[in-house]
Length: 220
Image 1 (cartoon, rainbow, N blue to C red):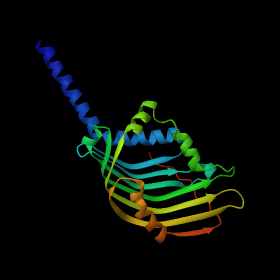
Image 2 (image 1 turned 120 degrees about the vertical axis):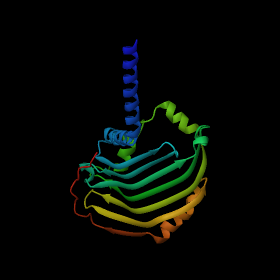
Image 3 (image 1 turned 135 degrees about the vertical axis):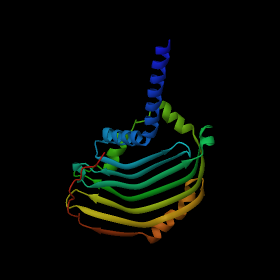
Image 4 (image 1 turned 180 degrees about the horizontal axis):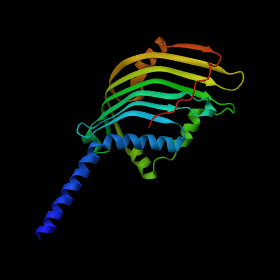
């Protein structure tokens, strides 16, 4: 009996150590899963520097998400998202309501490309992720009540449009929006101040295609 109790205590201690290890490495597991899902669904090289899952404060942060364009779209970077931070109301979520306490959205760069056959990388990306959620998940999302964002902080860098069809052309829009803050966002019209400021302060340049960039291999 004593031997059984001793073995049981050792097994319980090992189980607790495993559970603690899993909890401490949750951020790493989530980051690895996100990268794997994006790569599997799109085939595009993807890297994420850091993921923070805030269990205690009900938050989620992605830092330095980078997705590379495939060779058919000229390679180079498709998207660079330095930060996406979301803090949500846990009590509201329990009632199937989406109440976001704070959102920080920092988009440094996105490159929309038309390939030689007239296809766009955005369309291919949408097709790749279509059907990612199960019907039950889509139904749950559709039934979720959006009750607003208390604080929204937006940073926008550059949006480039590149046409690889001969003779080739490039258009780059520099938004130059940094840390624009809105409060009590409840519907899309509440975002108009950001749209207006982006339109007034942004600038667009056009010209031939830039020299091709060397395809960089993303880190996991």
